[in-house]
Amino acid sequence: MPIKPTEKEEEYFVRMDFERKKRIEMEQQEKLAAKEKERLKELHYMKCPKCGMNLVEIEYRSIKVDRCSACEGLWLDKGELKAMTDLDKSFLDKLYSAFRAET
Ligand SMILES: [Zn+2]
Image 1 (cartoon, rainbow, N blue to C red):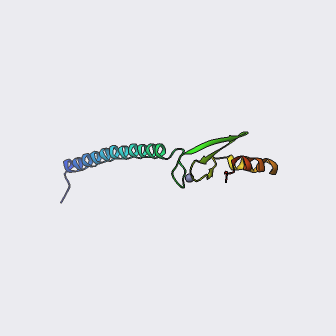
Image 2 (spheres, protein in one colour):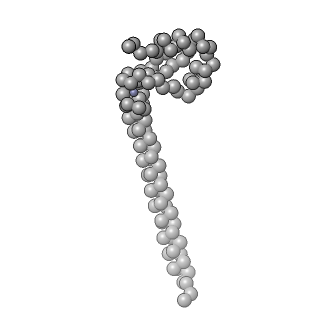
Image 3 (tube, protein in one colour):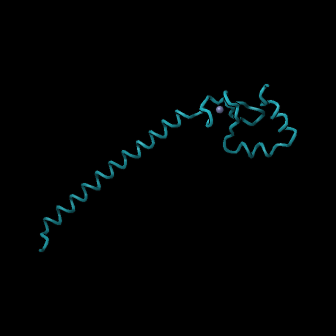
């Protein structure tokens, strides 16, 4: 059965309509993903990844570390571990005693 040009045209428009709706839907999903990312950041920013309590920023000389107010874990941002390993041993000892938990 030969396909009439109008049928082909109709098929084309249906496909175009689908592509357009799909694109709108994808944009919607991207917006949702961005919103969810924002929501998670808001929820987790400066929270301990282990116990969920607030982190407090402590600065010792040029190095800033985030310390958990509850479990006292220390968290480093990008580049801070390298900065610490570049320090000499005595500096690290001072840093350690400054951050040591009172027992
Ligand atoms: Zn914690």
